[in-house]
Length: 335
Image (cartoon, rainbow, N blue to C red; front, top):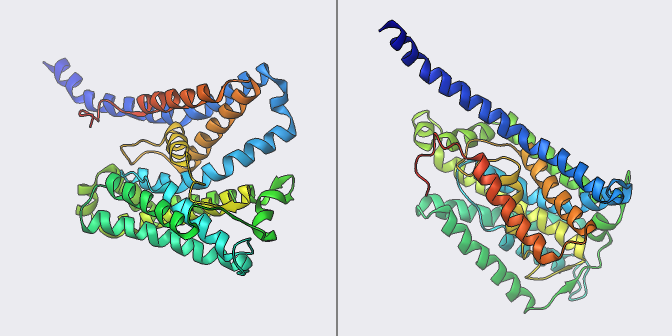
């Protein structure tokens, strides 16, 4: 009887220990995958290790990283944000119309960045208010703003593209500092800001709390509605910065500039180890996820893999990442 009681008392502790081990594995597994991927690609094509190729990987990763930072906060909260492409397209189009361009006489230079970021914040704020105030699922709310953003961007340009002639904006993609484009440094600054918000602010702690259980967070005195609205607003700011970088990289603004960005953003966040169920993950893990996707794409190009197959590989990767990240002892029902 005593041995049975002892075994029963230790079952919860054993489960907690097992869960802690799984969480540590989930946190470090993407880093191991990234290291192995780099080794494999380098063995297939030694040009992978050239400095010029590392710069190309950094350039390919800067926009997904900024977009992924915004999406990470929303996913950590237990929600989903599909408005990435809409906010990005709208931001890029507004930027192209405010700086020196080939369509009008505007020339606001670096000052144009501020209203663009305000637009991103405003759309994110609307996402949060509609989601919380009208109790519309985040999936449907942000799906709607995705199409609205693209539609407004298309209406502003009438389906055309505007070439950006502003030296400051173009310099983000062309000019370099310590061998890297200024856009890469801007993405790293965004990462540092996101890290501080996540680990050293009340908002960051509240986001994790909501992801761990909204009802418990509310009972603890956390203003759930306010945190949700602020998080979607913050995500909108990051998406607008992604739009600025995309416009700088392409040298133009149009309504289709964000096509495909949503898939790459969610892929990077999930592959990095952030759980779609919320409460587990970090912006540094998103950085690792972005690098995994960028290195994989770069490696497939170096190996002459057809583009159609590359998309298929990314699809398999995100399914595998979600399957490995789910704690099936906790998630008893798959929705």
